[in-house]
Image 1 (cartoon, chains in turn cyan, green):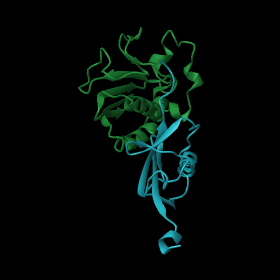
Image 2: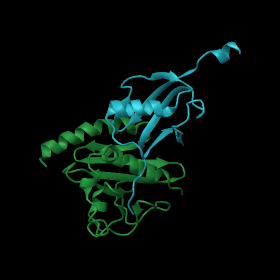
Image 3: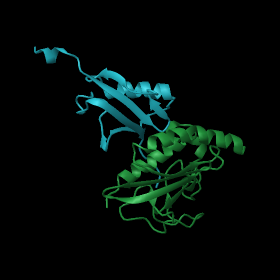
Image 4: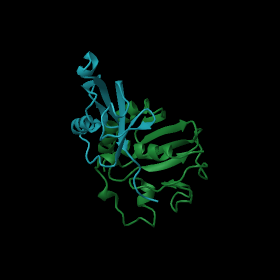
Length: 91
Length: 144
Protein backbone atom coordinates (compact mmCIF):
# COMPACT_ATOMS: atom_id res chain seq x y z
CA UNK A 1 0.00 0.00 0.00
CA UNK A 2 1.44 3.39 -0.93
CA UNK A 3 1.41 6.31 1.50
CA UNK A 4 -1.30 7.95 -0.61
CA UNK A 5 -3.48 4.83 -0.58
CA UNK A 6 -3.33 4.68 3.21
CA UNK A 7 -4.44 8.28 3.66
CA UNK A 8 -8.14 8.99 3.96
CA UNK A 9 -9.42 11.53 1.48
CA UNK A 10 -11.96 14.20 2.30
CA UNK A 11 -14.23 16.58 0.46
CA UNK A 12 -15.74 19.81 1.71
CA UNK A 13 -19.49 19.90 1.23
CA UNK A 14 -22.19 22.54 1.31
CA UNK A 15 -25.85 21.81 0.57
CA UNK A 16 -27.93 24.61 -0.95
CA UNK A 17 -31.73 24.53 -0.86
CA UNK A 18 -34.38 27.21 -1.03
CA UNK A 19 -35.04 26.50 2.64
CA UNK A 20 -31.50 27.40 3.60
CA UNK A 21 -27.92 26.27 3.36
CA UNK A 22 -26.23 23.50 5.34
CA UNK A 23 -23.96 24.04 7.11
CA UNK A 24 -25.08 27.59 7.74
CA UNK A 25 -21.59 28.87 6.99
CA UNK A 26 -18.66 27.30 5.21
CA UNK A 27 -18.38 23.61 4.40
CA UNK A 28 -18.56 20.27 6.19
CA UNK A 29 -15.47 18.08 5.84
CA UNK A 30 -16.56 14.51 5.10
CA UNK A 31 -14.81 11.35 3.86
CA UNK A 32 -14.75 11.13 0.07
CA UNK A 33 -15.90 7.51 0.26
CA UNK A 34 -19.04 8.47 2.19
CA UNK A 35 -22.37 8.22 0.39
CA UNK A 36 -23.72 11.61 -0.63
CA UNK A 37 -27.07 10.76 0.94
CA UNK A 38 -25.58 10.93 4.45
CA UNK A 39 -24.86 14.64 4.21
CA UNK A 40 -28.18 15.31 2.48
CA UNK A 41 -29.98 13.62 5.34
CA UNK A 42 -28.11 15.81 7.81
CA UNK A 43 -29.09 18.87 5.79
CA UNK A 44 -32.74 17.78 5.65
CA UNK A 45 -32.84 17.32 9.41
CA UNK A 46 -31.20 20.66 10.18
CA UNK A 47 -33.27 22.61 7.64
CA UNK A 48 -36.54 20.96 8.66
CA UNK A 49 -37.20 19.46 5.24
CA UNK A 50 -40.05 17.00 5.12
CA UNK A 51 -40.27 14.15 2.65
CA UNK A 52 -37.35 14.49 0.24
CA UNK A 53 -38.12 11.29 -1.66
CA UNK A 54 -38.68 13.13 -4.95
CA UNK A 55 -35.67 15.41 -4.60
CA UNK A 56 -32.70 15.65 -6.91
CA UNK A 57 -29.11 16.57 -6.05
CA UNK A 58 -27.00 18.43 -8.58
CA UNK A 59 -23.45 19.69 -8.75
CA UNK A 60 -23.13 22.28 -11.47
CA UNK A 61 -25.38 21.10 -14.26
CA UNK A 62 -24.95 17.44 -13.47
CA UNK A 63 -27.31 15.28 -11.45
CA UNK A 64 -25.40 13.11 -9.03
CA UNK A 65 -26.17 9.69 -7.62
CA UNK A 66 -26.81 10.21 -3.92
CA UNK A 67 -26.52 6.51 -3.13
CA UNK A 68 -22.88 6.43 -4.16
CA UNK A 69 -19.88 8.27 -2.76
CA UNK A 70 -18.30 11.59 -3.70
CA UNK A 71 -15.41 9.64 -5.22
CA UNK A 72 -17.75 7.56 -7.33
CA UNK A 73 -19.48 10.73 -8.51
CA UNK A 74 -16.10 12.17 -9.51
CA UNK A 75 -16.32 14.92 -6.89
CA UNK A 76 -13.39 16.33 -4.97
CA UNK A 77 -12.30 19.49 -3.19
CA UNK A 78 -15.11 21.92 -2.41
CA UNK A 79 -18.52 20.58 -3.46
CA UNK A 80 -21.68 22.68 -3.48
CA UNK A 81 -24.73 20.45 -3.85
CA UNK A 82 -27.97 21.96 -5.10
CA UNK A 83 -30.83 19.99 -3.55
CA UNK A 84 -34.50 20.38 -4.39
CA UNK A 85 -37.69 18.70 -5.61
CA UNK A 86 -38.19 17.50 -9.15
CA UNK A 87 -41.28 18.79 -10.88
CA UNK A 88 -44.40 17.12 -9.61
CA UNK A 89 -47.42 15.73 -11.30
CA UNK A 90 -50.08 17.58 -13.17
CA UNK A 91 -50.83 18.12 -16.79
CA UNK B 1 -55.62 34.44 6.01
CA UNK B 2 -54.58 37.75 7.52
CA UNK B 3 -52.19 39.62 5.24
CA UNK B 4 -49.65 40.16 7.99
CA UNK B 5 -49.39 36.44 8.66
CA UNK B 6 -49.19 35.70 4.95
CA UNK B 7 -46.41 38.27 4.59
CA UNK B 8 -44.48 36.78 7.51
CA UNK B 9 -44.61 33.32 5.97
CA UNK B 10 -43.55 34.74 2.62
CA UNK B 11 -40.63 36.72 4.05
CA UNK B 12 -39.36 33.69 5.94
CA UNK B 13 -39.17 31.67 2.74
CA UNK B 14 -37.94 34.50 0.52
CA UNK B 15 -34.52 34.63 2.14
CA UNK B 16 -33.67 31.07 1.11
CA UNK B 17 -34.93 31.64 -2.42
CA UNK B 18 -32.68 34.66 -2.83
CA UNK B 19 -29.71 32.65 -1.54
CA UNK B 20 -30.33 29.79 -3.97
CA UNK B 21 -30.88 32.10 -6.96
CA UNK B 22 -27.20 32.89 -7.51
CA UNK B 23 -25.76 29.38 -7.90
CA UNK B 24 -28.77 28.48 -10.06
CA UNK B 25 -28.13 31.45 -12.35
CA UNK B 26 -31.63 32.80 -11.87
CA UNK B 27 -32.28 36.39 -12.83
CA UNK B 28 -34.14 37.92 -9.91
CA UNK B 29 -36.54 40.67 -10.96
CA UNK B 30 -38.19 40.94 -7.58
CA UNK B 31 -38.74 38.96 -4.42
CA UNK B 32 -41.08 41.12 -2.42
CA UNK B 33 -44.44 40.24 -0.97
CA UNK B 34 -46.60 39.07 -2.63
CA UNK B 35 -44.43 38.53 -5.72
CA UNK B 36 -41.54 36.27 -6.66
CA UNK B 37 -40.40 37.12 -10.16
CA UNK B 38 -37.39 35.29 -11.59
CA UNK B 39 -36.02 34.40 -15.01
CA UNK B 40 -34.42 31.19 -16.22
CA UNK B 41 -31.99 31.27 -19.10
CA UNK B 42 -29.31 28.95 -20.35
CA UNK B 43 -27.70 27.66 -23.48
CA UNK B 44 -29.94 25.39 -25.53
CA UNK B 45 -33.09 26.27 -23.62
CA UNK B 46 -35.75 28.91 -24.21
CA UNK B 47 -35.64 31.90 -21.87
CA UNK B 48 -38.52 31.85 -19.42
CA UNK B 49 -39.62 34.26 -16.75
CA UNK B 50 -41.99 33.07 -14.04
CA UNK B 51 -43.87 35.37 -11.72
CA UNK B 52 -45.45 33.80 -8.67
CA UNK B 53 -48.25 35.82 -7.10
CA UNK B 54 -48.39 34.68 -3.51
CA UNK B 55 -51.25 36.66 -2.02
CA UNK B 56 -53.02 34.77 0.74
CA UNK B 57 -50.05 32.40 1.11
CA UNK B 58 -50.27 29.68 2.27
CA UNK B 59 -54.02 29.49 2.50
CA UNK B 60 -53.99 29.22 -1.28
CA UNK B 61 -51.18 28.22 -3.65
CA UNK B 62 -49.32 30.80 -5.73
CA UNK B 63 -50.60 31.81 -9.14
CA UNK B 64 -47.81 31.30 -11.67
CA UNK B 65 -47.58 33.65 -14.64
CA UNK B 66 -45.44 32.75 -17.64
CA UNK B 67 -43.63 35.72 -19.16
CA UNK B 68 -41.00 36.65 -21.67
CA UNK B 69 -37.84 38.08 -20.15
CA UNK B 70 -39.08 41.61 -20.87
CA UNK B 71 -42.17 40.96 -18.76
CA UNK B 72 -44.83 40.38 -21.41
CA UNK B 73 -47.36 37.64 -20.78
CA UNK B 74 -46.76 34.64 -23.02
CA UNK B 75 -49.61 34.03 -25.42
CA UNK B 76 -48.13 30.71 -26.51
CA UNK B 77 -45.37 28.50 -25.21
CA UNK B 78 -41.81 28.87 -26.51
CA UNK B 79 -40.62 25.94 -28.59
CA UNK B 80 -39.42 23.10 -26.40
CA UNK B 81 -41.50 23.82 -23.32
CA UNK B 82 -43.83 20.96 -22.51
CA UNK B 83 -44.73 18.67 -19.65
CA UNK B 84 -46.18 20.78 -16.85
CA UNK B 85 -46.13 23.84 -19.13
CA UNK B 86 -49.53 23.78 -20.78
CA UNK B 87 -50.02 25.73 -24.00
CA UNK B 88 -53.81 25.70 -23.87
CA UNK B 89 -55.57 28.70 -22.39
CA UNK B 90 -56.56 28.46 -18.75
CA UNK B 91 -60.29 29.09 -18.34
CA UNK B 92 -59.73 31.71 -15.61
CA UNK B 93 -56.66 33.55 -16.92
CA UNK B 94 -57.02 33.02 -20.67
CA UNK B 95 -53.29 32.31 -20.91
CA UNK B 96 -50.89 29.35 -21.13
CA UNK B 97 -50.28 28.06 -17.63
CA UNK B 98 -48.42 25.68 -15.37
CA UNK B 99 -50.43 22.52 -14.81
CA UNK B 100 -48.67 21.20 -11.72
CA UNK B 101 -49.83 20.48 -8.21
CA UNK B 102 -48.99 23.46 -6.02
CA UNK B 103 -49.98 26.12 -8.51
CA UNK B 104 -53.26 28.01 -8.33
CA UNK B 105 -53.95 27.38 -12.00
CA UNK B 106 -53.77 23.61 -11.46
CA UNK B 107 -56.07 23.55 -8.45
CA UNK B 108 -58.62 25.88 -10.08
CA UNK B 109 -58.64 24.09 -13.42
CA UNK B 110 -61.88 22.18 -14.06
CA UNK B 111 -59.85 19.00 -14.66
CA UNK B 112 -58.33 19.13 -11.16
CA UNK B 113 -60.87 21.04 -9.10
CA UNK B 114 -61.27 18.04 -6.79
CA UNK B 115 -57.52 17.78 -6.12
CA UNK B 116 -57.33 20.16 -3.20
CA UNK B 117 -54.35 22.32 -2.30
CA UNK B 118 -54.88 21.25 1.29
CA UNK B 119 -53.58 17.80 0.37
CA UNK B 120 -50.16 19.25 -0.53
CA UNK B 121 -49.80 22.37 1.57
CA UNK B 122 -47.08 22.30 4.22
CA UNK B 123 -44.76 19.82 2.51
CA UNK B 124 -41.25 21.07 1.77
CA UNK B 125 -41.62 20.45 -1.94
CA UNK B 126 -44.66 22.71 -1.90
CA UNK B 127 -43.03 25.62 -0.10
CA UNK B 128 -42.61 28.68 -2.30
CA UNK B 129 -39.00 27.73 -2.93
CA UNK B 130 -39.98 24.13 -3.53
CA UNK B 131 -42.56 25.08 -6.14
CA UNK B 132 -40.12 27.45 -7.82
CA UNK B 133 -37.47 24.73 -7.83
CA UNK B 134 -39.91 22.32 -9.46
CA UNK B 135 -40.60 24.90 -12.18
CA UNK B 136 -36.87 25.31 -12.71
CA UNK B 137 -36.29 21.57 -13.02
CA UNK B 138 -39.15 21.33 -15.52
CA UNK B 139 -37.62 24.17 -17.52
CA UNK B 140 -34.18 22.50 -17.38
CA UNK B 141 -35.62 19.49 -19.21
CA UNK B 142 -36.50 21.57 -22.25
CA UNK B 143 -34.29 21.76 -25.29
CA UNK B 144 -34.55 24.08 -28.25
